[in-house]
Length: 615
Image (cartoon, rainbow, N blue to C red; front, side, top):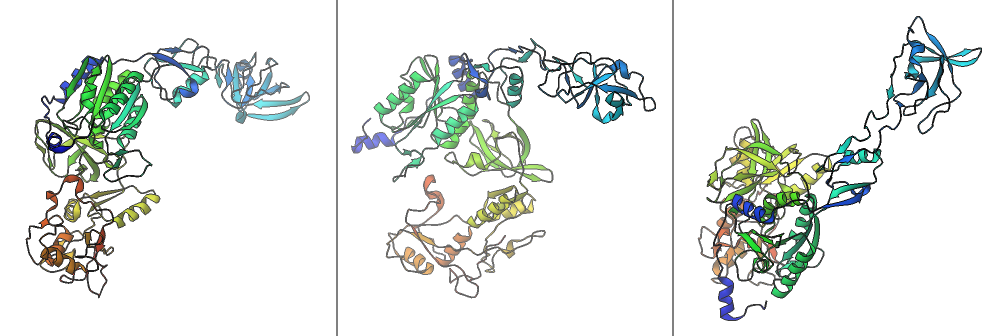
C-alpha cells in the first residue's frame, strides 16, 4: 500500500473507524471456538530422546516385566529360608559359601543347595534354589575345615529382600494414558521398558508475524522512530510453552502487498497464524483487513471488552484459526494467554492450564473502566494480616511488566474500581511464589539498582516498587515495606526528609543526587549556564516550552522555587504530554546542574544547599 500524501491522505490518517461491535470476552471466545472446534491434530512417533514435554496420543502398555528377573534388594547372601527358620542369637546357623559372587549383570551359574549361601550384590539376579537374602550386616565370616563359611544369627523368611520379576511394572500393564504430558519420570518408565519410540500428538505449527513499519529485529541498530520487535519472540516462546511449534516469519512493514504475501505464506504452511499489530481501526491498520480475505467464515470477533486487549481480532478461515493480537506487548500477551492459549493447548492435546492463585488485599484503590474486564498486574508483599497486592502503573505498552510482577488480578466488567483493602484473587505468572526477603517502596533511584544487585548476589530476594516518596512513606506506615527511599523538601522549614517522618520510622541518610535541566545540545539559551540562569531564561523567552515535573515531586518543588511562584503557561504539566513521551529524554540531551556538596553552593542557590536523599 502506498504511503498517504496530501491533505486527503492526512484526513484519512487521522480519521479512525470505530469498533462497531465490542463483544464480551466470553462471547468472543465462544464464537471463536464454535467456528474452530479445536481438537488434537493427529499423531506422530518420536524418539524417546525427543519425547520430553510431548503429549501421549494413545495408551502405552509395558512390553515386558520390570524388573525382568528376581533380584536382590540388598548386599548379602542368597540362601534357602528353610535353613534359617529356627535361627536365633543363641542358636546360629553356619552356611558354606558357594564358589561364585553374583553382581549386577552377572547370570548365576550355581544353584543354592541346602546348607549353602551365595554372595550377592544389590540388583544381582537370585540364583536357583534360593528364596531369600540375608543382609551382610547380619552375618559373620568363619573358618571351617571345609573352607570359608558364614554364621547367621537371624532367621529368614521366604521372599526376604527379594524384588520379584514384574513387581514394579508387569508386562501388559498400562504405563501411560493418552493425554499424559511426558516428563523426566515418564521418560524413566519408558526407558525401563525398553521403548525407543513414543506415539505423541503432533504439535500444531503456529505461524507468527509482527507488523509495523517501526519494527527492527533484535540485534540490528535502530533508526529514528524505530523500536525492536519484542512481540515476535515473546509470542513464539509462549506458543512453545503451551505445546505449539512456533514458526517465525519476522516483522513485516505496513505495506499491503508484502504483508498479504507473508500472511498467506504462513496460512498455507501452518495450522494457526498469530499476528501482532495492525488490528485497530486506523487507516494504516491492515492486518484485520487482509485476514478477512483468507477464507470462510472469516472474522468472528473484532473488538473484545478487555483491558488491555480491546483491539483483539479472532478469525477462522477454512478451518484454521487466525488471530491478530494488539500491538502493545502487555495487551498482546494478556489476550494471548487468556483467549488463545486454551485453544492452542487443545490443538496440542494438552490438558487445560492449571492456574496458581493467591489471596491478597488490594493496597491502593484501582480505578477501572466500566463495561470492560480489566487485568491489573500486581506485586505481592507480605503484611501482618496476609498479602498485599500493589498494582503497577505501567500501561499496555510496557515490556518489562510480565518479568517484574508476580501476577494479575481481574476487575469485573461491571465494576468501575476496586477499593483499597478489597480482598482479591491474584493469578500468579509462575506456579511458585517467592516473596521477597526485603521490600523497598518509594522513590526510585539508579543507585538502588546497584544495592539490589549486590543483595541478589548474596541470594536475597529483594522487591523494588517505585511508588514515589510519599507512596513509600505511606507503605512504611502500613508496614508493607522495610525501606522507603525518599527525597522530600519541606517548603516551610527548608529541611529535607526529616519533617515527613512519623512515629516508628527512622531516617538513615543514603547518598546525594544531582538534578538538573535537560535541553537540546547547542541551545545558546542554556549552554554553559547554571540551573538558576536556565530556569530564568526559560521563563523570559516566550518561545521556550519547559516541561515540569508532577506536583509533589522533589524536583518540582525546586523548580517552583526557582520560578519564584510564576505560573507561566510555558511550564507544562506532564499530563499534557503524549503518553509515550513522558519521562523521555531526547537523544544527545544535556543536563544542566552540579552535584550538591556539603558546605558549598547547592544546585538550586535560592533553596537550602543541604540536599540529602535518604533511605
